[in-house]
Amino acid sequence: MDDPLLELNKAGSEQPEARNSSDGARQRFVLGETGFNEVPRKYRKFYRKWQGEGDSLALNEVLCPVCLVVIRSSRELRVGDRVYCMPCMSRLIVTREDGILLAKVVY
Image 1 (spheres, helix red, strand yellow):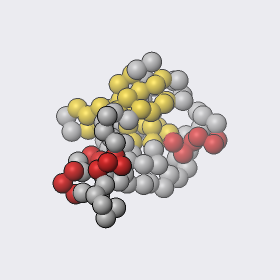
Image 2 (cartoon, rainbow, N blue to C red):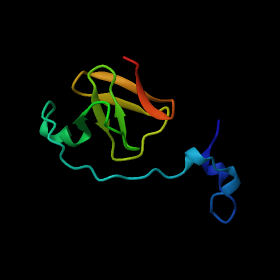
Image 3 (cartoon, helix red, strand yellow):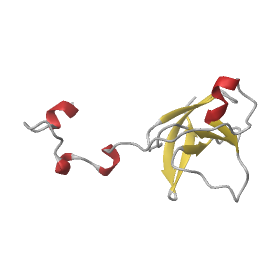
Image 4 (cartoon, rainbow, N blue to C red):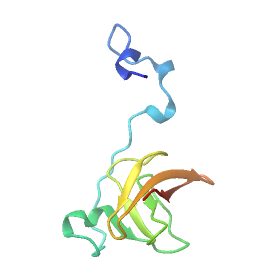
């Protein structure tokens, strides 16, 4: 088992050579209202409508393959992260194909 606390040196700082580029701190994003009204008001900032082929995804967004809604996160999404699509009630896992983040249906 990999214990992150064991990777600390005696001075209490993390060893840079032991860190992986994917283990770094994730970017944080401030989510605003997008006008998406298919979920309760409390969760509307986490979803937006897919605008079509010209639309691009940010580091904190992934496209639901079931209902074609963009799922947004307040933190950067990485491969292996799990997300939930409330409009179609699908559980998804984030994968990378052709350099972009895609969601694969788990349940």
